[in-house]
Image 1 (cartoon, rainbow, N blue to C red):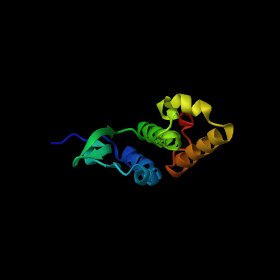
Image 2 (cartoon, rainbow, N blue to C red):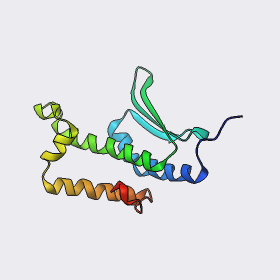
Image 3 (cartoon, rainbow, N blue to C red):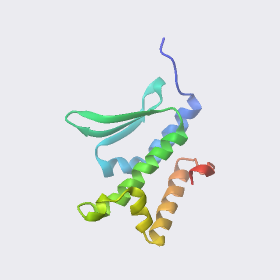
Amino acid sequence: MLEVRITDEERERCRKVADAFREMYGLYGDMYVGDAGPFGFVHLKWYGDQEFQGNTVYTDSEELFADLWEFWLEYHLLEPVKGTPLSELSYEELYKLLPEEKKDEFAKQKREFLKSSEMDNILRLV
């Protein structure tokens, strides 16, 4: 018999997180987050040559949120500098170069993701 690795409650939380970040799947075009049954939620990444080049399975909605937020932030840091010398900088270095207004926008977006995934009570993720 297959061992269930995720509770029903945590599955519903993960579903809300995956739904909150749905817009991001279109930005990347080569990723997907979905329910993997008794295993939890799977994040498939970097589709090419008829297969995904990476995947991660989640049974914890906070971990799923943190990783999807990191993907979202990295995309929005790197996309504006793609093809320039700034693209050689680390994500941390790019973030430090942002004007305060942009950092505030990102913080607001993170709060919106937290709210739409009904995780806005989880303060350690802010």
